[in-house]
Image (cartoon, rainbow, N blue to C red; front, side):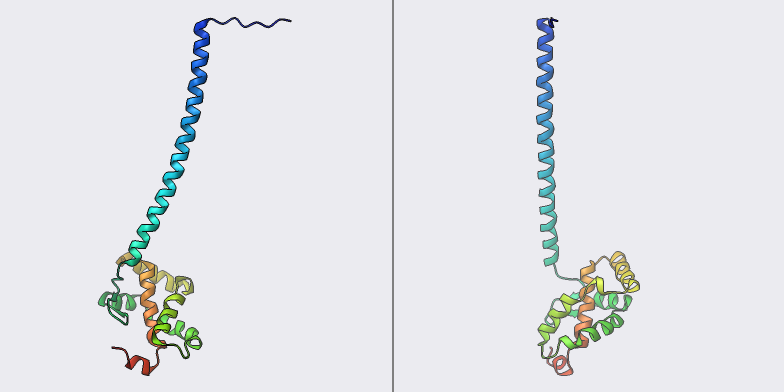
Length: 163
């Protein structure tokens, strides 16, 4: 049994051109996917840098002074989300951990400890609604609660020494 292929020169050129085109398409597709992955990594990097920039901007809900105090809009948010009640509950849980700490250490503990995860569902809904309707971020609103908690944890002597 003999097998022979009888193709013309035009057909051979056409077949080689089609194979060449197929190889080029495969290479192009691989490059596009590689570029897409690089672009996605670049965009993730840019998003991270933008978040860092926003984190450095002052919180509009606090006064730019030491110690941190609530601004007028911070006071409004505090009332809207019922931050004093939230702070009362959170400060009772933190009180054993602040014995012997300086006001700065107490403030840092409050900023680290206060989080959305520690809120009850109804409180979380109030905080999210305030963030949505007023424009601050959740972390900025949590700073309002942290300041309220800090103020409850400071001893009267520590509060008197504040400017």
